[in-house]
Amino acid sequence: MYITEEALSLGFSKKILVELSNDEPRATEPNNEVVAMAIRFADERIDAALRSRYRLPLTDVPTSLFLYAECLARYWLYGRRPETKMPDVVKENFKWAVGELEKIQTGKLHLGLATLINPAETAESAEENRDDLLPDSSEYEVRANTKLNTFGY
Image 1 (cartoon, one colour):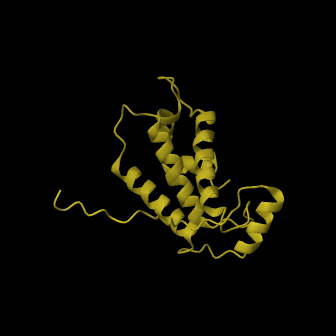
Image 2 (tube, rainbow, N blue to C red):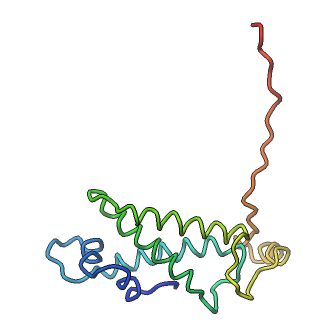
C-alpha cells in the first residue's frame, strides 16, 4: 500500500473527502469503503507500472510513489462525481503521475531501489510460475503492405 486513508485525508479537506466519498447528503464522515477503493485503484495502477522493473511488494517505498498514489486516488474520487466539474489541478496532477509511472515502466526514471528485476530472470520465472511478469518493451513493430500506386485511375 502506497498511501493510507489518513494520509489521503491530509491531501485535501475532510469536507471535500466526505463530499466525494459519501453518497449521503448529510454525512459528516468519509465513506471508508469508497476511500479504500480509490486507494486500491492507485495501488494497482502503480503496481502495474512497477511490475516489469521491480520485485513487488517493495520493501522500501519512495516518497514519490506516495505522491503518485495521492494524485491517482484523488482523480478516482473526483471521477465518482460526474455532475461536478473536476478541478484542472486534479487533471494535471493525474496526467503528471501517469507520465511519471510510464517513465518508470520504460526505464527512463529510476526509483533508486536495489530490487530491480533482471529481464532474463523475469522471463524464466514467468515460464515456471505462469504469472504475468513478462518484460514490457512498450514498443510495437508494425508491418504494412507496400503502398499501391493508384495514380492515373
